[in-house]
Length: 114
Length: 115
Image (tube, rainbow over all chains, first blue to last red; front, side, top):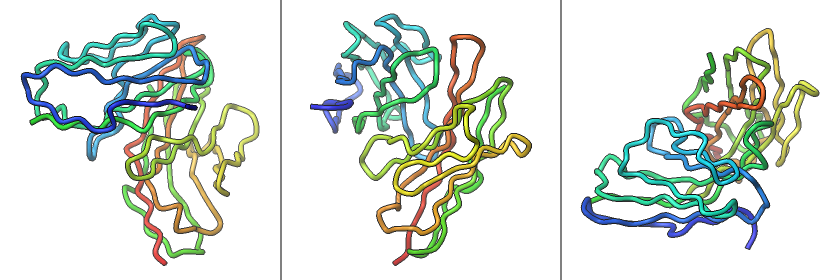
């Protein structure tokens, strides 16, 4: 596979469930990102990892927990979500965090919280 | 302060006619600017980028954008729209001191192409 892949592509979960989103990049990049895309709102940057270290956390509720075990993989662990968390969750990667900010995006996971 | 404003949430053009998607930005540094496209149920794809070199930037699929510092604009254009151009387009600004880059996405412009 090439580029940035995300699994699952669609997820429906109840508010008491625990689930995880997975992202994998095959580009040799050093930085990875989680974004939330909701209808009629700008894309929201949630978390940034650079060389497997979390470098940015934009006031995201603790019910979202990221994990970056290595530079190729990024997870978003979900628990006790709310209906307003329903959105498209996009993963992205870039060569590095500090310079020109060109990102490569995965196709996203469409999350529905019931 | 950093911000980006996409002036139109929806643009509708006829196939074969020019496309203009407007973007204005503000930045306290020398910014990099990007346009991304998102087709339905897909992730974002980079169309083109400006990084302080030539002010007229050419991208994929015949799109181009011109960085105008005096107008703080980075509008996206294409001479002739194709049906496959129907998608949502995002203008993005990135700037920051030293090695730290902050990024802001615009709210997006949905382009409709009428046959």
